Amino acid sequence: MRLAVKDLGKHYGEQVLFSDLNFAVTNDDWLTVIGESGSGKSTLLKIIAGLVDASTGLVLLNDKEEWTYPVDEYRQRVSYATQAAQLFGETVRDNLDLPFLVRKQEPDVKRQVALLEQVELPADFLDRNIHDLSGGQRQRVGVARNLIFAPDVLLLDEISTGLDADTKAAIWHLVEHMQAKAHFAVLSVTHDAQEIKSAKWTLKIEDGRGVLS
Ligand SMILES: Nc1ncnc2c1ncn2[C@@H]1O[C@H](COP(=O)(O)OP(=O)(O)OP(=O)(O)O)[C@@H](O)[C@H]1O
Image 1 (tube, rainbow, N blue to C red):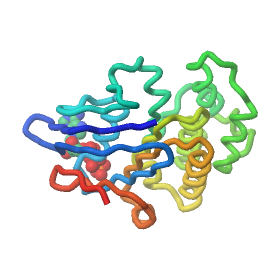
Image 2: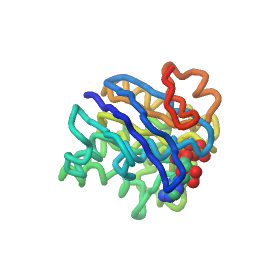
Image 3: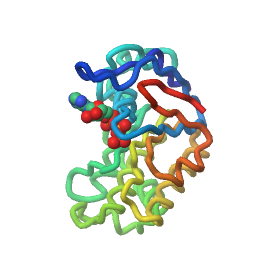
Image 4: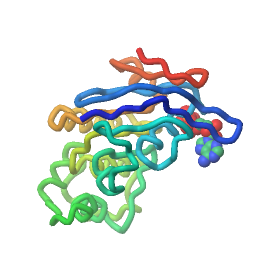
């Protein structure tokens, strides 16, 4: 698997966020995306997720442009998690059933419970009403939903912002554990000092350019 960004640029009217971004990620890579507020980090992830159009350049998944994939297939391969996980329906189960339903499969309760346990939520959370969850619990359920089926690329948009240290640790533990098992690539946008400090590979968006280091 290889996801590449080629000469990518984005502007809103006169406002140029970035231009000529070039990089590629492959299995087991973890690229941490940093830069000042407003530099376009979230926009970059949304372009890669297929939610926002680029102004110039290409996003290639396995050498094929992202738009050539059927939308459902692309979303399954390139999974996007945001700061405020959008849960829907009534219960946690509704949310963890979704990845199975879009694949026309019967929900696998064992797998759902295993994922919950990895983010330190007990099995009976499956029947919790989503409105009764704390922010950190919602985020854990959101990330568990992204990882029920391993994607090729996991996009994390400031998912640990505002979370307490235990919740952050539980979520990172799940992502690292699943990456070691399934070998997907991670692109993670963050302002978290600890996360930036421990990053092995970073893309800094600075003055509209991307600097890899
Ligand atoms: N749909 C839109 N229309 C016009 N401008 C937009 C739109 N979406 C984002 N922007 C602008 O693009 C700029 C970059 O936004 P983006 O959210 O990508 O930045 P960011 O680097 O992720 O910022 P932060 O670190 O604060 O989350 C901002 O100035 C924002 O106002």
